[in-house]
Image (cartoon, rainbow, N blue to C red; front, top):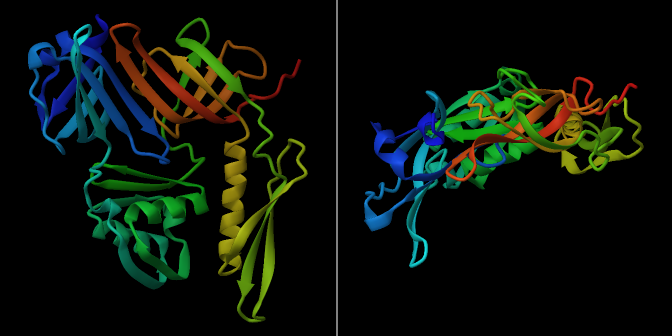
Length: 332
């Protein structure tokens, strides 16, 4: 099977795969952990201007061997040409409509409400339905506010504070706690489907022993501090002292626990390339084997990029964090 035959693409519900394949130069899908939206990039040989340019905002999907790996809207179409190289047409799509109300500033507040109630209203105003982790959704605060902030800004701000993933896909928004093994994982072995790796399973830059968060005690009208012990088995001396203050002790605990999860996630990093696998998803785990002691183990996939091209065929590239399962320990 030739490399392009495993890919299929639809635009506004119409399958264009058969006409696309003879002219396909490259196709790339990138699935990120929420720090940025998913993207799709397609480049075709456009000699003679034979392809009709898709409309801006057209719905587009991409699948690998029948497994859907992208759904979004056309964001940009670019034509390139020169005497020596002919014509090419590039289509870039985003996982949500970048022209929509996700970026529109809002002004609202909610008193004595859960995060699900607050963020759900912000999402609804922007035209999104919200899927939220039940644990996070039940967090109650006496005051939530979006002060001329967009849904994008509110979601990303809260995700940083709570060590969560905030992601927009189509007209759906996801807000989920990081580190939960909800998505099915995959495996890769050197000598089989693991093509290459470049991994540092131990990274000291983000390693802390604990976190300290300052909070306002309204009864005494003074500030107090809440300390969270990270309980790391790796030696660390530094304390992660959070700038600014939060409103109460409960929020201080939430921020401290989030910084603990962030430290675990950033404890190691690396990249890997495997044979193309549409089952790989950002925030799922991958188990590596056959490399060497200290590298074999589990890692969190934070970015997954499926690529196909005339020159190099098909592969899946991974950005990895949060080593576990023995990664970082050479027990010999």
